[in-house]
Image (tube, rainbow, N blue to C red):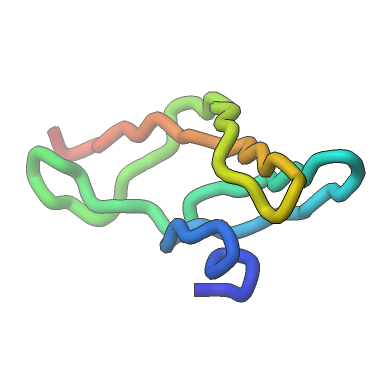
Amino acid sequence: MSHAGTIIGISDLEVEHVERDDNITVYARPANRPPCIHCEHDDVKIKATNQRTLKHTRQGNQIMTLHLKAPKYYCPEC
């Protein structure tokens, strides 16, 4: 887990960048693709990507907002 991942407390995320002003804004995405949940095939494809916004936690007096790219996967084997 990266140093930024340690601060966020969520493993398997790749932090793209961090903005600091009145609040802390973190942009992240999954570090690797999981296998298919139905057949365990490793070569899943990304069908689409949604962005989810979470008010994650407080770091001191600043609210940390996490913008997470959440991919939808497609398995060519299923």
